[in-house]
Length: 140
Image (cartoon, rainbow, N blue to C red; front, side, top):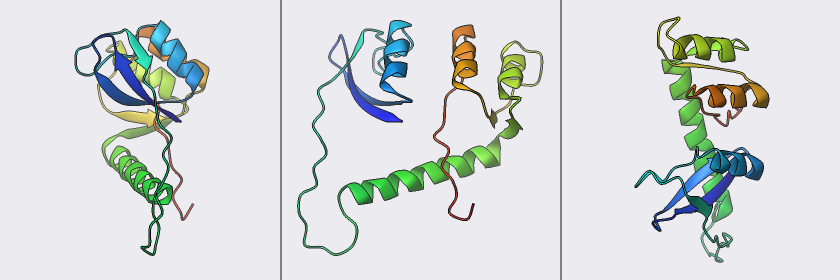
């Protein structure tokens, strides 16, 4: 996953995560990236400064390590929420997502696995899906 600071043509700045720089470029070309403030599709990468941690005299984790711990905790909480509220459909995810999208089965939250090609095909069909960085549990 890669994080970008983005800016729309109306100068609204926002952040977004993408699987890669190539995926960002593809989604921008397909007008799938929109400004959350105004809905504008004319989105570009905004200048970003590197995250440089200032020296600290405190003990314990700081700087990027602290941010990594916070990110890991947030992703763990997201995984817990998805597992508690959605149905796991495994490798049947693309088929099940289509059935829900086309009204062939009950609408509900699902999660599972899909290849990059399968995910792109779902997006191209207008099926609302999103990749989730699935963090492994420490005990697995």
